[in-house]
Each structure stands twice: as structure tokens, then as C-alpha cells.
Length: 449
Image (cartoon, rainbow, N blue to C red; front, top):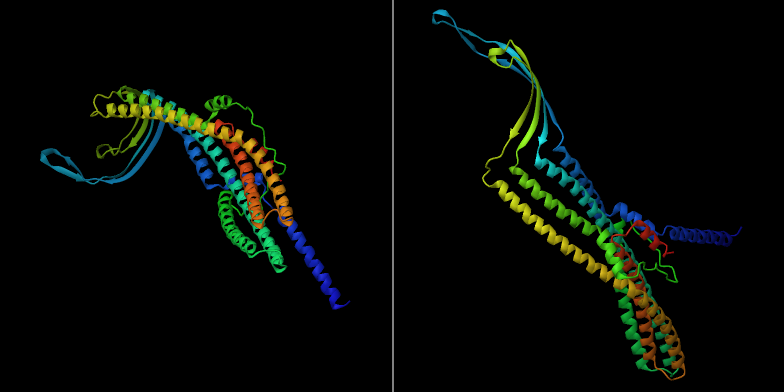
């Protein structure tokens, strides 16, 4: 076998290896669904929200603890050496130095029988746990929007790079055409300068688009906890999910009933109302059942050779009379906090409805906008081809073609952005309505290939 044959086979094997590597790289492209699941597991903000909710769940247990028995046990053992002086007859005294170990063990129980403050704290703890869950539902929707926005921004940045490169290549090819025409005496210096200026601008646009792509991909990588690699593009033709229901009033009713941010604000107002009850309970008496069991050995120096066992059951009453105005001040603070919580509920409700209206309007108008831009892109292609033919016929000039090409590139960029904006509007609308779920994310994932 000749050396050239061996080298040829090696080159063939190397080419096959590169081809397989290319297929492997394409297979490892992260899908929209996979990227979402990675974000759900790795987004540091969402992890923080998760553990905040875990903390909030314990408020129910903490509130209930004030109504349950409090049982404690204690034990102590001490070595003692005392100087014991004993008076004898005739004014004489005897000094001894007893050494002994004193031991004390006690088991005590306290069960609240009447404690209005503990009752209010228990009710408040349950509401706080529900409030924490509602806040977490809001954070979960925010994570979906944060991820989808980052993924679509990275896709848009990639599209911008491809469009900028295509525009640059078009101008470069046009520059070659102008050079050949000028050499033949059919072109002008003006045409060459116009195309050169456009080409320089296109080179700068490519560099700017690549910088934006790097920044957007880094944002997505931080969100999903890994290098995103190749991203799934949108499948064409583009068929987003239909908007159901269509009317805004229906979405408004859904949002008022289901929006987790509104629910959290409602529960916060209830927590503040219960804070008033808890503060005013400071005026009420407290009654506890007390039970104790204790055993002592050598409790004091006078009984160092004795032991005793004590059992007791009783009721303890605590009645506040005067605390320097503290209870009244705390109650007034609670009333002010309740009024603040009600105002915050109204403000959040208004904000949710504003966001809902904006998302609904965008979702509705984006359908027509995408359709219009799709037609504009098709028309732009036809215009570019027609302008090329008109230049050959001497009807149009080089600048007309450059402008047509720039217009087509701009329309394609606007079309890509409009498609992504429509998807984000659908997600934002469902988030504002409180119905955004993983099923919605997976439905969006089906639009990618």
C-alpha cells in the first residue's frame, strides 16, 4: 500500500470523526424544556425562594406550640463541704465539717388553659404559612418568566448575529460586483463608496451583535448553571398557542381569584389583623395548669442527711395590671400595620391588573404584528430581487439595492423579536392571571425544534 493511499484513508477517517463529532455536538444541544428544568434546579434566586418557603412553613408549628403542654426536666448534683457550728450546753459550740453530695431532680408541666395571646399567635402562624406558600408561587412564576426571557433573549441575540453576518456578506458580495462593473467601465466610484460605507457599518454591527450574544448567553448560563451550548430555534411555520379565553374581563376575573401575589397580600392583611388581636390579648388574664414532681437529696446543709419527694398540681393565674403603656402602644402599632397592609393589598391588586392589561394587549396585538411582519419579510425579499433586476435594466441605482437589503434585514430582525415577544406575552399573561404552570412551559417547548 502506497503512502498516498494511507494518507488518503487517514484523511477519510479524520473526516468521518469530525462529522460524528458534529452530530454529537448537535445532539447535545440543550432544549427549551431541558434548559427550564436546569433553571428550576440551579437558579440561585429560585433556590433562595424555596428555602424561604421552607422557613415560612414552620410558622404554623411555632404558633401551635403556644397551645400545647410545656414539659421540662431538670437534674443537678453538687459536692458540698460545709462548716457547721452547733451550740452545746454551757455556751459551748461544736464545729464540724460535713461533706455530702446534694441532688435535685424535677419534672414539671405547664398547660395553658386560657391564653388569648397564644390563640391569636396560633391563628397567625397558620396564615403566615399560607402566605409563605403564596409568595413562593409568585416566585415560581417569576422564575419561569426570568428563564424564558433569558432563553429567548439569547435566541434573539443569535438571530441578530446571523442577520448581521448575512447583511455583511451581502454588502461584501455587492462590493465585488461594483468592483467588476467599475473595471468594465459600467460602474461608478460613487457606487463603490456607498457599498464600502455600508460594509463598514455592517462589520461594526456584527461585532456589536456578537458582544450582545456573549452577554445574553452568560446570563442564561448563570440561570441554568451550565454552558447552554447550541439553543433550540423556533419551529417554522410559527404557530403559538391560542389565547383562551380571549376577553380581558375573563382574564381579570381569573386574576382576582388566582393571582398568588394578590393572595399573599390578602394573607398579609389577615396576619396584620391577627396581630391586633394578639396585642390586645396582653390585657387578658392567663391561666395555666401547673404540675410538678421533684425529688431532693441533701438539699441544704441542715438536711444533708435527709431526702424528700414532692408532688404538686395546681392552677396559676397571671393578671396584667400596668406595664408602663407598653400594651397600648403595641396595639396601636398593630392597628397602623393593619391599615398599611390593606393599602398594600390595594396597590398590589392595581399593579397586577395593570400588568395583566399590558400582557393581554401585547398578546392580542402581537398576533397581527407577527402576521404583518411575515408579509413584510416576504415583500422585502421580492423587492430586493426586483431591485437587482431593475439595476441591470438601468432603472434603479446601487443605493436603492443597499436600502432594500437594509430594510429586509431590519424586518427580519423585527419579525424574530415579535415572535419571541408574543411567547413572552402569553407567559406573562398567565403569570399575572395566576395560572402559569409547568404544563404551559412544556406547551411553549413544543414550538421549538
